[in-house]
Length: 618
Image (cartoon, rainbow, N blue to C red; front, side):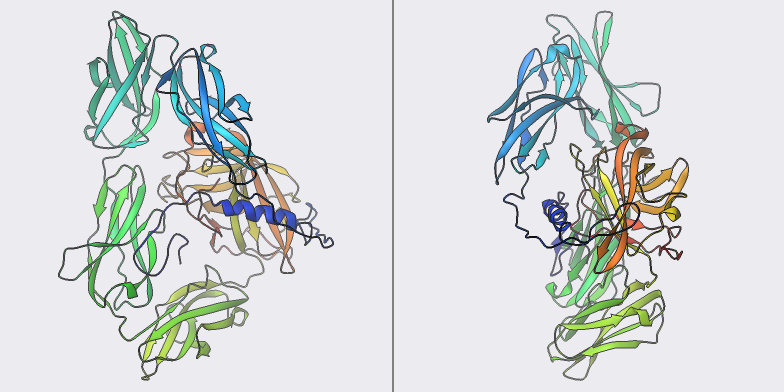
């Protein structure tokens, strides 16, 4: 089941903030390192220490913090206020910071340890222009939270400011500017735009007087990324604002196709669609159903990240004939409704059986579980396997009591892709066969086990930056020299490359941005990660310097290699090439078969999905 979904009827899948539980788990792991085998040095050894008593900390919860907007514009000396609270031990202090708008370079105004939290800001020492403000709160347990930023303009002199119309716009867009300190000077304002990379500005509206607003028909220009500016004219003197960059104009609706769910439908089934958008990216896909002969469509589920699918218990629908369709909405708000897949029968009146998803990759002994019910009673459930696409089925086991489970020793079969199914025998002697679950079986000694990211201290959640980390965990020990020639696992400098998923080399869409690791121009043998989110602006590539280390950990008596990358400064590109991802999703790592174990056997390249609760990575 997709980590964003719930079975049991029509559902909605919402984006989640980075799980605070992850912080607690990491803290427990840090304590547990004193009582169990731990990470080795770069020479790939492991140690064990004696027992200790572990007690839960008094405060696992980070504080909450927000900064108060001082208004559209400020001048002279102003007071910046923040609010902070903590449900545990209490707030230690709050630091208020400012940054030139969008630069990501933050300067502290002050640190206040007493509520109400505030800082004096003398703006006369700064250049006029737009600035971002934020607050960082630290509690007495050491946890830190950074607030969302607010934007204002420093206006100590004559200043014109182009207001940001938003990251993504469509149709008729309200454009506006702010003008400060004109006194009695007679003036007018015009608002202009141009395609990013173009040299010529076009006028959206002119001869504006207070309140300096106008309506702009964005449908009259081609969809793409645009820049905006405002110009104030007083007599023969023209004053130009800072440029607002990277505003995506998107008046093109996404494409969407409903996948045929099959018929008849029973038990818990997967409903899916395919969707794409050329400019702002797909924001949501809603899957809908309607009883045949009616025009009343109801929501089956709403998905906010790929894959555009959800698991739904069809028992929530009355048995009968239905049509299914998908409605895609892009980030700009354009929508498209797919053609309906009609005359699909939902029948749960007699028996139903389904096989739980056993996981993305099976190895060694796997637990297979089926769910079965029948109005005639369940006599038995058989779980079977066959080479994918084949028709020769082999029993794994037969179970007569719920829960219907089997332990499958996958070492008895060849590494390949298999179809799994469950066969229900009811009290009337009739059989019902579940939908197939297709899974790869790989008992190669080496494969990917997990991929995770951690947001570094002082970094913005969802925005890759300095001190963020990404870890790759394997199922066995890796020869470091197979990842990078001559490497022994000790800390070494590399580059982490982030590419927009719309690039021709990827074609994964806006929420398919991809990460890989290079040494100079050589791609290292770690493989690549589909971040399943929008971190890099359209058709751009960014590289960050990073430090790569390898350590060995012991899990269930087996030694595994963990490769950790700690991000640093920009190697190529700039901060404005990145965007803060707002969608919670699970990354997918495709390991490279260039990596080998200590015996020289190559790694499996089977995809590895990030474990745990879906979050905004980095």
